[in-house]
Image: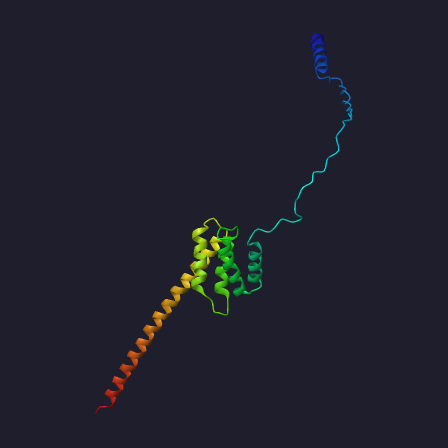
Length: 186
């Protein structure tokens, strides 16, 4: 029994020695950073004379475009149409052609005096859709053209119904007259 006790004590000592924690390790100190400044001789910048105007001239047609935009925004559609048309003639391949076509199309249909010109307005919007398929204004122009086409079809349908109604009213009047004449006979 003594041997068993001694074996247990020895085993306990062995196990307690296995679980001893290792000693704390000391971290090395952080490296010190030394900044070294080396003087370098840099020549002073030499001014170079340049003949650059204070402001660059506006591209041709830019002021005409801005004038047309101002007229459009303020609701002066006649002046906007005039200036947009001049811009299209002056710069047929200008930077703002898609916007000009869109706004001139709207100006034609929004003007009050003379009355709206849907023929010219839709022609301008169709040109935008056809010639500038990547323009961000194309979807809006397409919707306007689609709505106008639908409105035109509705107007034609209403006109056809009105003609039919007039014919039916005329026929009803003729039948009423025949019926009234029959009642008068003995």
